[in-house]
Image 1: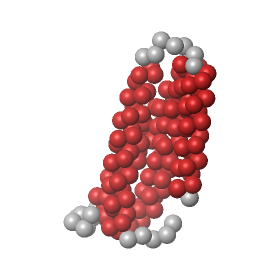
Image 2: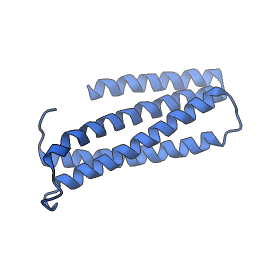
Image 3: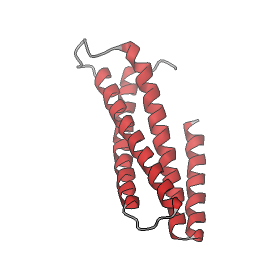
Image 4: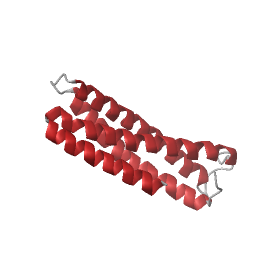
Amino acid sequence: MQPLNAEFLAETGRQIASLSAFLGGFAATFFGILLQSSNSRRHVGWAAGAAAIASASFILAVISGITLALVLHPGAPSGVAKPTFLPQVRLLILIAFTCGIYSILVSLGLSGWIRSRQLGIVTSVAALISGIIVALLVR
């Protein structure tokens, strides 16, 4: 990975942690709602599973982002900052956040199928287009 400025990395960690906290809360709420659904179709189970994966991934991204911001803070005690630790944290944030984004998109795409075929097509297309746009932006 390319070496980046510590201030930039710390701010990136804070921003990803904030966004992940919001999206993780949404995914957890969506998961809870799907668990209470009386519908026993497999779409419900797949959507709930994807929401659970998204929620767990965003929790990892929040913790990793906070860790990155704390380690890189200029006022951090000298024993806290471990430069050899940073590449692993950056990789964990990237993997967890990406997994969370795609899992929540899968969950949203599947959720429409619970209601009807027409809504399922709309939500699947919306999730697919969003996934493509995310992939292009991250690239």
